[in-house]
Image: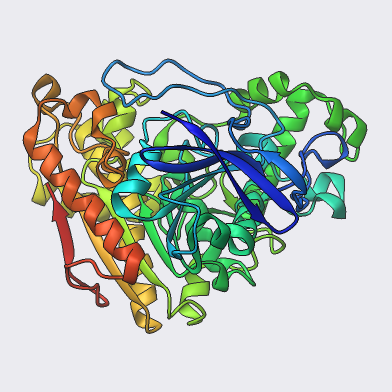
Length: 475
C-alpha cells in the first residue's frame, strides 16, 4: 500500500508518498526552468513555497535515446523536456534522524541519462542502508556544456551549465535535506562515468567544499577536462551547422531542441580514443575559468580538499563496452594502433605500447587498443587522482572491478558501468547477473562498502598511498 505523506521545509509543504520502503519525494524543483531567456544560462535558484506536489517525477534532460541490447540493465523509462532541473529524494522516514546522505550523479557520456526510470532500485537502496538518497536531474549535451562565451558574450561565459545545475542541487540539499531525515553535514557524492567526471570536477570549483564530505568516483576521476580552445572550436562547428551567427541570441533561443540534439551527433566524435584524448570532439567539463576555476587535480594539490575522503574505482575492461556496441572499428595494422595511442602519447606511442606487448603478448591490434584505452582514460587517471590527493594529505581508496558475466563465454569482460548495479544493489534489473549467486554476494559486499563509507568513511580495505598504493579487487 502507498499513502500520502507531508513535511514542511522552509516556506513549502512537500507532499510525497509513503510505503513499506519509506518515504519518497520526487520531481522537486531546485532551480527555475532553463527555458526562454534562461536557456543556455547558469541555473537560477528556485525557492519552493506553499503546497508542493512531490508525488510525480519531473522531466529528465533532453536527449536522443538509442535502443539498448537485451543484456543491458533497464528500468521503467522516463520523459524528457527542457524544464528538467528537479530532484528526487528517497528516505526511510522524513524525520529528524539525520541519516547519511548520498547524492547520485547519473552517467551517460554527457549526452544522456536521468535521475529516475533507470535500473536503480532507489527506495530499496535507501531503506536497506538507512540512508537518504538524492538523485538530481541536470542538463546534458549542448544545453548543458556547449561553450558559448566567446560567441555570445559575458552572459554566456559559464560553459559548464550542467555542472552548475548539480551545484545548485547540492545547495538545495544542504538547505533542506534535514527535513527529509538527512544530515546536511554528512553528504557523500556518488557518480558513474560522466556523472563521476562531474562530481570530480567540483575539486576545481570555488566555494563548494562544505557541500559534501566524501566522493565515490566510478569510471570518472579528476581528469577529462576540456581545454577552452577545444570547446570553442566545437561550438563554432555547431553554430556553422545550425546557421547561427555569433551573438544572435534570438536564433539561439529559438533553435528547436530536436535540432540541437541532431546537430550534436553531427559534430561529436564517436571513437572512444578521439573523444577522450586531448583536443577530442566531445562534451564534458570545460576549463573556462568561470564555472571551473582550476583543473581539479590542481584543486587537490592545493590541499583545499585534504579533509575529504575519495574512493576512485574503474572496471578492468572499461573500453570493451564500446567494442561490444559496435562503436569501435577494428584496428587492422600496427601503424593504426600506434596512431590511436599517439592521440594520448604523441611520439612516445611506441614506448607506451612496448610494455603492454610484453605484459600481454600475441594479442590482436584491436585488443591492444582496447586495453590501452581502458587504462589511459580510466585506470591511470584514477590513480593520478588518488596520488594527488594523498600527496596533499588526503585519504583515498582505489578499487578495480573485475567481475565478468558468463554471457557469450565472457565476451563482454568487466566492462564500463558494470560495477554501478553492484554498488547500488540493483542486480535484479541486470540480466547478465541473473542466476549468479557469486554476483549477489559481491554486490552485497560492494553496497555495504558504500553504506559504510557514507556513514563514517569506513571501508575495510587499506587507503591509497602515493605513488603506489593498495587497490581493492572486486571479482
